[in-house]
Image (cartoon, rainbow, N blue to C red; front, side, top):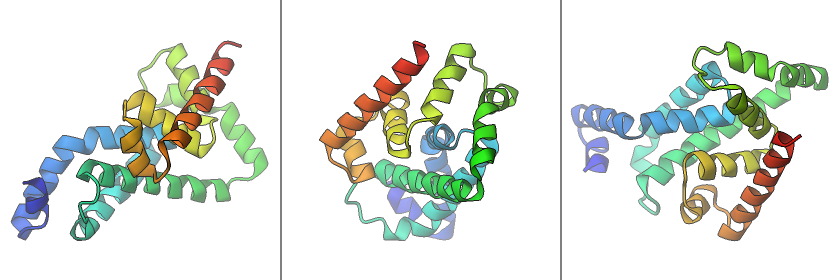
Length: 176
């Protein structure tokens, strides 16, 4: 039904897009936010993701669920953003950004967590990109490995290993 609306007349497309946003918008935003960290960045990536979804819905082949397809677009957009941002940073700037991570997170009006959550998010932000994505999808989204496998085009075994390594790194850092 949703897919038919999204591929229909302009009026139906608008209605379908509103349904899509109601159904997936919040989860999609928070998925992106966990990857790029800051609200302003997440909002930009979220907007880019929505544009790509809107423009690309005609090419959706149905080989995966609509949810998986949307999350793949969001993940790719977030990773592209992070890669572009990394190219712009020098080592000294990156070190300074890491040192002020907690201060920036606490100053973020959208962050309402406590000290423990802030430390958890800091440690997650330090994970390599793939481990951070897998950790976020499994821990926060509770996404099954099979669905992650479709989303990230990686074997279930590799995903389990990435999650295990990410958990161990985060645990070790939090226990210090």
